[in-house]
Amino acid sequence: MEAKNADELMLIGAIRIHANANYNKGWDVVVEAFTDGDILEYLSNADLDLTKALADIQAFIDLRKEMEENCQF
Image 1 (tube, rainbow, N blue to C red):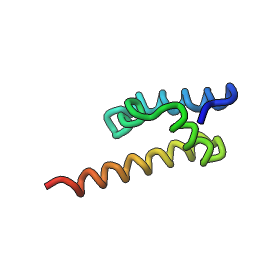
Image 2: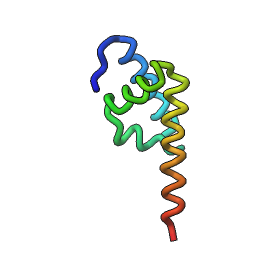
Image 3: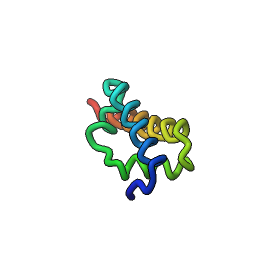
Image 4: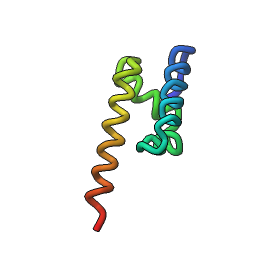
């Protein structure tokens, strides 16, 4: 998936800024592993609603952390 317009690029940038600001709160995965296409997929699923996309990514991060905690011995 590729950004098609300036609005999508701006929203991707806003999520990247948020991810960098919250790097040590689990958002490192977004900074280090998410492509623009991955972020755009969350935005598309949220109908380009930045708040909803951030919440959806946070839910992914929370699930990832829970899975990581369950795998520790």
